[in-house]
Length: 172
Image (cartoon, rainbow, N blue to C red; front, side, top):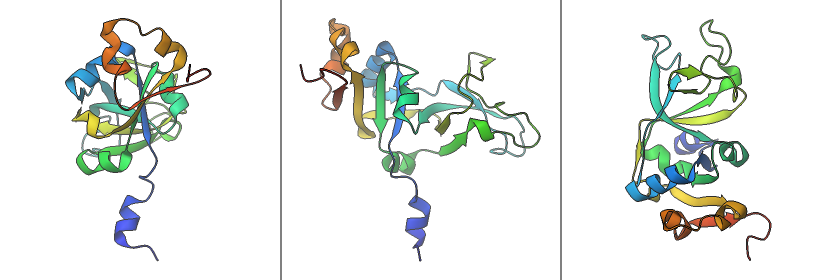
């Protein structure tokens, strides 16, 4: 039989990923904060407010999916993150709640809703993440992207102690 502690922490061992641009990654490292920029419609989260929009940060359970959003992928320790942040698991393909059509909660940017990633499973963090570095276990950058990071602008990424350059010829 599972203890209560085992029950409430089950499934929180897997890493979470957030893909972003080089410019945004530099900003995240320099400010040690991720802003809550992604609006999501989470029906059922706030039953008194159907279709309530909350802002937060989308983290994927899949590195490959996260890398579609940018060439720099932050890997987070989910167990640490859950201690200070409200994290909501979300499956876009199963978002038919309270009679709303599927993918109504699809990622929206600046007011436009897109179903492009409607089969994505994610963990949605409500609000910003401050002290980002204490939750990051790695910063993944493909070697081709890394080779093109030549300006001093990208130094915060290139010199970060948690940097992981991956892909063919990464050790060159």
